Amino acid sequence: MQPPADDLPAATSPAAPIAPGAETAGVAQPAQTAKFHLFWWVTLGVVALDQITKAIVRSILAPFESRTVIPGLVDLTHVLNSGVAFGLLNELDLPFKNVVTTLLAALALGGIAYYARHVRSEERLARLGLSLILGGAIGNLLDRLLAGRVIDFVDVYWQGWHFWAFNVADASITIGAVLVFVELLVVNRHHASHSV
Image (cartoon, rainbow, N blue to C red):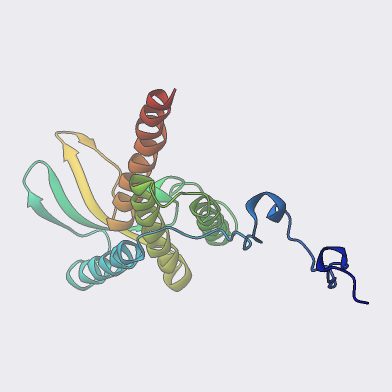
């Protein structure tokens, strides 16, 4: 005589390994991988514009030659910068200076990459800022690797005062840093105060 269906033992099967957190979610969650939420077209555009403008300056101006753009305010001046951004450390005479400045630029790229992995997709200003910074850093690093020095050419001045000569890459890095700080100090703080 066969036992009633209610008394039959339940069918058993080998237990499958359970992913951490699957007990609460009901299903195994895929591993989260950090993504670079950058505007890559901005980065590539900055690198291209930076290198094109430097090539134009090399073709029309000899080193340290100037050409007036806006009288009393802006000149194009072919400056060879062996320091870092905006000519900093340019006058400093160090052994292996090119190696040191190239390593500094490479470390900066590493820092940008590390930070970019932690930027959320909705942080648009920070994403744009990091894209600009990355493009500028790559543009100047290319100069150091290929020529050992960076070409600066925008000379802004007023009467006897001169700002540091800079290039498209330097301007991109500066604008990008401002955007990142605005995202961190203004936008995120605004969102945090409204969520309390």
